[in-house]
Image (cartoon, rainbow, N blue to C red; front, side, top):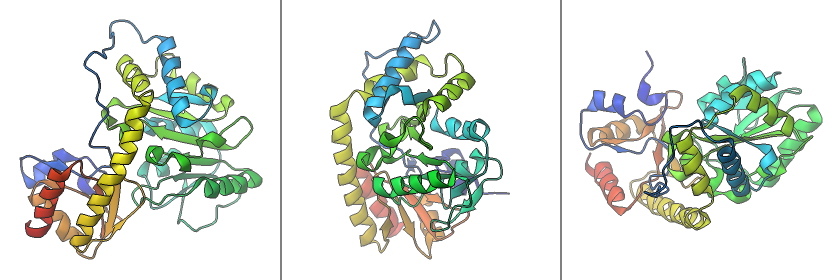
Length: 325
C-alpha cells in the first residue's frame, strides 16, 4: 500500500493519524502561506446562478495579469481539471517531463515520461511545468520559445503548466499563445494568491481550443465566490508586486536557514525549495514528530520539498526542529 504522505502534499489527516494531534505546521505544499486578504465586504450572492458577465470580467482581469487577449483565456474550476480534460480534447500522442507533477502523466492516455534532456519523439505533444515541480527548475522565455519552434516544426504541441510562474512574470510564455500557434498554457490562481481551496485556474490557448473547453465545461463553470474573489485579486496590482518582493525575501531567509543546517536548497521558485540529503527520511520523521510536515517522495527517497515559511516565527520553529527534533 502506498504511503499517502509520499503521494502529494497537504495531507495533514494522514500526518495526524501517524504522528498525533497538535498545532501542525504544513510546509508540504508550494502554496503561498500569506494569502491575498479577501475584503470583508467582498461577498457573492449565492442565490442565483453565476452571471456570465462576471465570468467575462474574471477572464479579462486574469488575461491582463497574464499579458494576453481575453479571447485566449478560459476559466477552469482548478487548473488540474483543465489538464485532465486536455487529452480527450486534443488527442494524439503525448509525453511529459519527469520528475514533475503527477497529473501530467494522467493528462493523456499512455503519456510517455521523458527525462529533462531526452528528445521528444515525432509529433508528440510535450507537457512540462515552468517552474518545474518539485525541482523548481525555471526556463526562461527564450528557451521555451525554442521548444515551441521545435515542436511546431515536428507537428506537435507544446503545453506549459505555469502554476508557479506568477513570481516570475518575465519567464511566462503565455504572451506567445495565439491563433495558429501550437502552444497551450495553464495557470493556477490558488498557489500565488494562497487560496488553493477556491479551485480556480485557467487555460490559455488558441480560440478553437478555448471554444471546445467552453462547450465541455458548460455555462456555469466557476462559482460566484471564485468569480468575485478572483476578479478583485487579479486587479490588485499593488498586492501582486509587493508579494513578489516579499516571496523573494522570505525564500532568501529560508535558504540561509537550510544552509546553516547543512541542507542545500534547490530551485528558483520562491514558493518552495527542494533538498536532497542521504538522511532525508530521518529529517522528515524528526520534523513530523515536532508537528512540522514536509513533503517526501516515493520515487526519490533522498528528496524533501519545503514550502517557504511565512515569517520569522515559523523559521524559528523550523530551526528548533532541525536542531533538536
